[in-house]
Image (cartoon, rainbow, N blue to C red; front, top):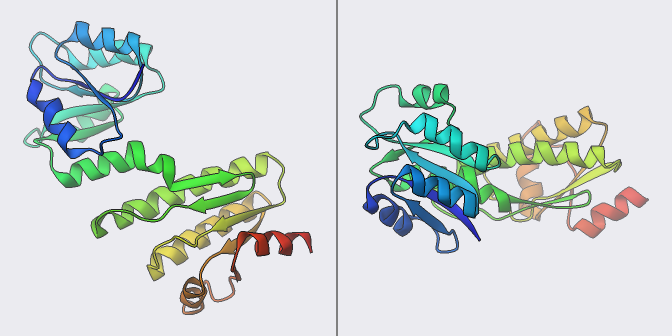
Length: 236
């Protein structure tokens, strides 16, 4: 069996509260102590393990190291109170991948989901074609969405070059039209593509093309109306 998240916390309400704040399709398991956490990590594949930093008779860092041996592919997140000072640095020093503050708030949960879940579906790759998923959620999450896209696109461009394609087609039809951010994303991908010797073709709406023409840096970027059209330009 698999579970997306394992919450290791001696207080039952923590996992119950988290369950109400995350999307239904994300599965969640809970462990109230170290033996239960070890058992859960032996039984199932996990995507993220949340470990509370203050449990009776438990050294959270040692427990995390044991759990990581069983779940090397999972992200490990430190659960801590906001009042703790320098908690980000402390978590990093102990070997955790990130921090989630208690009590949970929607902003913290959004950031957590964006980091460990949403990005799986933000960018789909089919051979040398990258398709950007539409933005969902509150406006406050837009910067995170663009940041994740930048990271994912950079990695995908490397993969496309490694597979010996001559060009990369990026379909931005669903991209939110935020002028500066959209332009920065395209310029970033263009720079990355040049570095690895790929030609970049952008697919998008007429609105996107118009948006790009407004900025000197992207005025010369040609925007194709469909992936098929971009592919034919490569074959021509």
